[in-house]
Image (cartoon, rainbow, N blue to C red; front, top):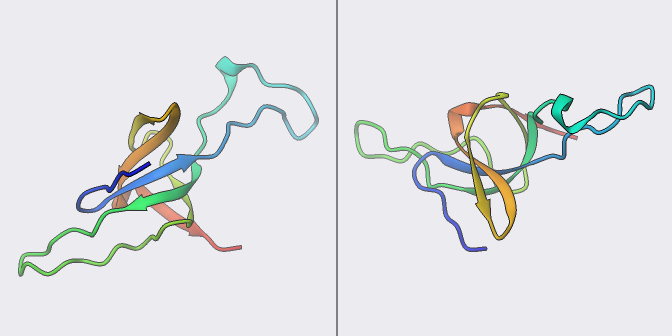
Length: 96
């Protein structure tokens, strides 16, 4: 896949939705919550400030991130579902 987000946009591959509860019960597809965690696949160059300088992005490729439940736009590429969102829609980077 060759896709380069523009400006302050980030392409994220969402984690799979939880199919089982902690106690072992299976969750139906309709009741599964939308994941709020994913892996950064591609990053834009960053937004320009008023002086024409690039503002560096806070995330990089392969970062695992937490984002808003309704953040970003779903995009299908090569049969896979991704989220295209702004850098500001990402709340945190998971550091393991």
